[in-house]
Length: 99
Image (cartoon, rainbow, N blue to C red; front, top):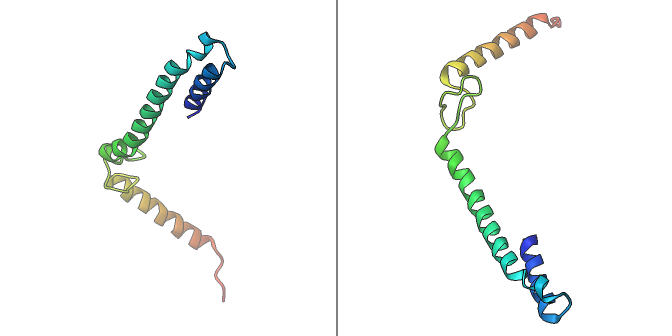
């Protein structure tokens, strides 16, 4: 958008005589670059979520494919759950019991 604004200003300034003709003539090529950049940016931002969905999820530990919305594959999910359960059991056994 900044490139397009600069191109528009150059075109207006060239026509009004605020800048030299050779500098004012840079407005149209700059506008083309601005439009191309804008379209490319829009296309890449539209492609990113689609590509992420097509690629699917990957396991955080081994990189294998995962179910939709999961961070781990089935094997590592089981391991993570078992580790969490062990941690909860250990922390519960360390706490003093209230009477």
